[in-house]
Amino acid sequence: MLRLFANLLIVLACNFFLIVGNAGPSFAQECPDPTKATNASAQQKQASKRLNRALPSYRARSARYNLALVGDSLVELWQPWIKDSFPTRPVMNLAVAGDTTQNALYRLEGLDLPDFHPADVVVLIGTNNLGAKTAPCAVAAGVVAVVSKVRALWPGAHIYALSIPPRGKRYAFYEDVRIPANQLVASSLAEMPGVTFVQMNDDMLRCGKPSDKDCSNYKPDHLHFNEGAYKLITSFLAAAGLQL
Image (cartoon, rainbow, N blue to C red; front, side, top):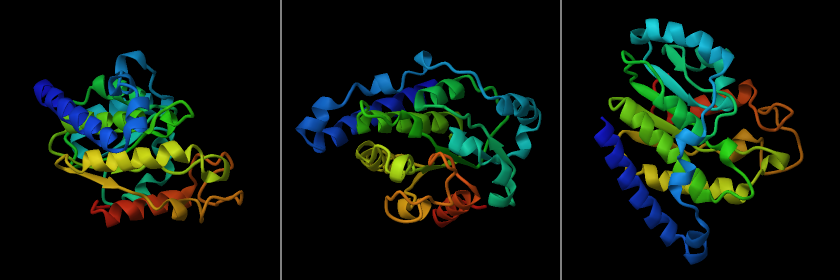
């Protein structure tokens, strides 16, 4: 398993440099070493109270679960609507609010669920890596590393990797980072077997083009989702082939 994961990382790193190189000289020169964006040991972070409470049950009854969710607050706060979103699937929500891709890697490396063999895994991560001093390829490298780790943990699962959604003022927070990062993730994951990249419809999520008008799909912080957004995300996953 470790050898498979190591080989996957080597292949992904090579593909990543090819993608970045094709994006143009200036972009390639500004891109940091992808290993810095995937350094799980430097991003240790405790699980949330919700996950700590849920883990004993997850471990004791792991055989009954066949769908896992991995991500940050956008996934952890999905919990109140999980049964409505996935009415036929017992769902294990492994997301933790505030997690970066590095945090998620650290968490997955220490996950102790030996009897858990999900049929499908949904990944939504990366929004907490967006920033003015972060290159799109670094954000994308982290997302791809998380998906690769999920693939190594559960090789029999089909993985649905959701695009990083809009957020922030005018729902246009660091679009110059977010949009190309999603494009790089899509290109990288296209070559990975058993993985479907799900490009969500940004304008549907934010109720139209970027504007100062509040969107009911979002909470007042313009980051976290209300029920309407989760209904949309569920429809995007269903259209991509995930059984609900």
